[in-house]
Each structure stands twice: as structure tokens, then as C-alpha cells.
Image (cartoon, rainbow, N blue to C red; front, side, top):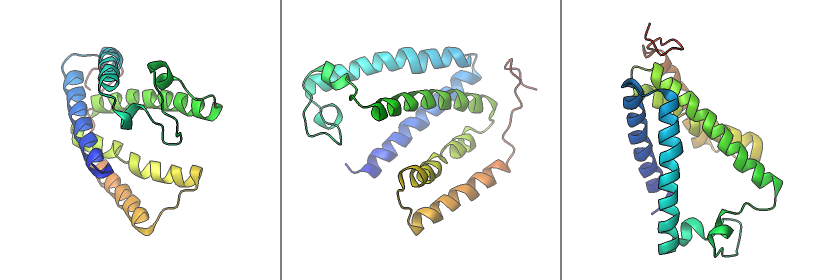
Amino acid sequence: MNYLLYSLLGAVFLSISDIASKYAIDNKVSNLTYITWSHGIVYFIVLTIFIIVCLKYRWKTFILYSRESNSQQKTLSDMLKLPNDWKSIGSVILGGVFGFLALIIIIMAFQRSVNIGYTVAVISTTSAMTAILAWLIFKIKLNYYGIIGICIIIVGCFLIGKSENDLKVDFDGKQT
């Protein structure tokens, strides 16, 4: 399966997750309760099951090789060990911290949004922001199609921003 199919499948799974998030938040589940259960306890349980399945069936693509390493990792300890490199360790920590902060902000956006489709569309500008940051930080070249795509995303975000999509929720969660 090529990356496009995996990407689309991931998008479908994220859409289901977003809809479930919106439903839970709109139906008396607090933000903290939602994050604790869905991204804490449930993630831990699913991750544990996933590791067991990967070990049992030896899903080499997923757990046995890193992209830059030629060595095979044999044990669970080897698989979970971070490289002895501060840049790699820092990138894992930054990814976790910013991923968590993004989750908090996204949940707040879902809470205040009328149409979750519009909200997710704006959040999906991640692809444009990632391309721009990759260009700035890693000097990855953008071709004309990429630049045009980024411009279309920005125009789409502007048009969505013109729609009436705010619920006007205060910090106590009361609709105003």
C-alpha cells in the first residue's frame, strides 16, 4: 500500500475520532475527562495491545527497523529505547509536548464550533504549515504544485473563517 492510501485511511480514522470527540464534548463529558480517558487511558490500553500484536506477528515494517538504521532490534527494550542522541531525544519530547498542546487547543476549538467539518478543515491546514516549516527548518524544496496547493489551502481557510461557526462558549463551558 502506498503512502496515499495510508494517508487517506489515517484521515478517515482521524475523522471518526474527531466526530467522537465532538459528540462526547457536546454530551456532558468535560475536556479534561475526555483527554484523560481517550488520549490517556485508552491510548495506553491500545498501545499495549498493539505492542503485543506487533511482537507476536513480527510486523517488521512498524517496529523492527528505523528509517536511518540498518540494525534489527530484537527485544521490546531495544524497540522502546531512544537513540543516544540529544537531537533525536529532543525531537521526541518536542513532538509529545506540542502534540499534547495541539490536542488541548483542538478540543477547545471543537467545543466552540458549530460545524466540526469547518473546524477540522482549518485544523487540516497542518499540511501547509508543515510544508512551510520543513522548507524553513530543513531546507526542503517546494515545487510549484506545492506552492499552489498551499495558496489554495490558505484561501480555503479564509473562506471558512468567513462562515458563522462560533458557539461563543465561556470558560465554564456555558453557551452564551
